[in-house]
Length: 311
Ligand code: AVJ
View 1 (cartoon, rainbow, N blue to C red):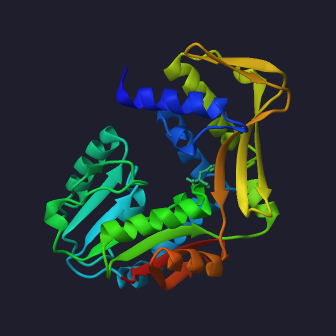
View 2: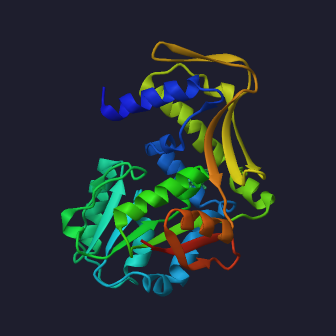
């Protein structure tokens, strides 16, 4: 079995065996899930991507002022590298761009396309899980470093994990480095609930695709009709929670293991934490970063933060 499949299998078996049951949001993004996420980013209700692109477009030159000439820009979880394209024209000449992503195929494809569109930009892809520590290419050793982590992906982490991630990034990027990061903001529960419960049902399909993927890739026995999408803003924890709720008692089978569900029992598939400016600044400070500037869209829904590594 392929390494990735072995890991996926082990995670699914552990997650469905846990109480309460859970699956990691990183498994949303197979080809079908990535296509559904792209559809989400175009929904009226889903403000996150639109608001961030507005900020990157509107404040490109202010953001670029935090990037020294000759810097190496390291993108955590680069995916399709769409956001960096928004910034590249505004940035001073970079020594290199280091996209870090788990998907080797996506990295190779993006490196090729970036090379075509920005022939003067050296691209040094790293295939790694960006939540762990990884080594930067030797060629980057003597250049100033700038991290880039758009999309509010940091919201998927528990706050203590977000702090750990930022501390690791401080270690990887080094003292004096900058970090440009997209952070979704607290707002009215009505707006948040709508963003994760769109009328067209795209987010529901995105969530349910996790089960479809488990069936496809792990040859599991799951009745997709037996589960429904459930997303809500947890006001106390300040996070959107996404769940797949069993609509009746049933059993899911994966590789000789069986997992019993009571009617109404859920699999927790995602948290999407929302921050105030103050709470994010406190968290970043505990991880060794100082906020130098932050920008929001005209409606104040989403933020982009410029951090500086203190020590
Ligand atoms: C990609 C993690 C930022 O939390 O808003 C969108 C994922 N989940 N709709 C988010 C997501 C449901 C998204 N992030």
